[in-house]
Image (cartoon, rainbow, N blue to C red; front, top):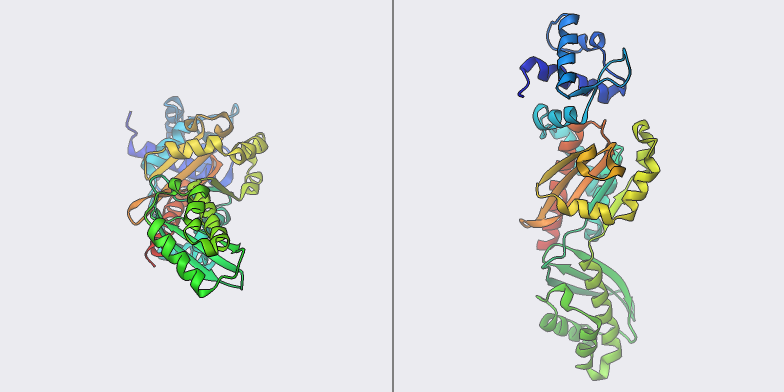
Length: 341
C-alpha cells in the first residue's frame, strides 16, 4: 500500500530521530520536529497506522516507536536523496583519499581506511576483479646492484609491486633482456597463464644469465598469482564496538567478517551499482542486526570491485549512502588514471 504524504513525513521523521538519538520516538517529541502543524492525537493515529502496516515497532509497552526493517527499507528506497553531498563534503572525502593514495597498489585499501574513519563503521572492499584480466605492463626499476622494484599492471587496473633480490647483478644488459622477454611473452597474457614453469622456460632462453633472469621472472609470477586473488579488505572493525545495538553479537559479527568466505560470496552476489542490505535481507544470522551499504566501482568503464560499510541497522543512511557512492567514484577515477599513465 502506498503511503500518504503525511505518513511519509512522519515515518521519515521517526527514522531520523531514532537514528540520531537511539531512543524510541513518542508522539510528543515527534511534534517538535515535524514540518507541519498536527495535533498529538493525529500523530498518534498515524503512528498506530504505520505500526499496523509493519513500518514501526513498539519495543516496550507504553514506549515510543522505532523503525522496523520494513520501515528502514521504505525510508532508504523512497524518502532520502541518495546523492545529497554538497561540494564541501565532496572535497573533504576527496582530500582524505588523495592524502593516503600515493601508492596505486594501495588505493582500494586506503579508501577503506578513509571510509571507516568518516562513517564510524567497519569498511570492506574488494580489489579489482581478476577474471579475464591480462598483463598490460611490467616494470623493472633497479634500486641496488642486485635488487629491483618489480611492478605488474593488469587490464582490470590491478597493480602489484614488490622488491626482488636477484641471484646476479642487474646490469643494463640484464634489464634489456628482461624487457624483451616480458614484452614478447607476457604482455597480453591472462594472469592464470603465468606460472613458475612458464618462467623457467623463459629464463632458459638466456642460458648465460639464466639464474639472474629466473629470479626476476619468478617474482613476476608471484605478482601475477597475487593479482589473481580477490581477498576482502577489512578496515575499522573496532568501530563496531562503538554501537550499543550490536553489543550482543559484536564479536560474532567481527568473526564473521574476518573469516571472509561468506562475506566474499555476499559481495559477489549483488547485481546493482549500489546495494543497501538491511538486517535479515543479507540472509546471514550474524548480520540480522546490521546493515550493509555496498557500491561498485568501475575502471575504464569495466567492473572493478566493491567498497562498502557494515554497521548497525540504525545508521545514518542519508549521509552514508552518498558518501560511499562518491568515495567509490573517486577510487574508480584514480585506478583508471593509474591504468592510463
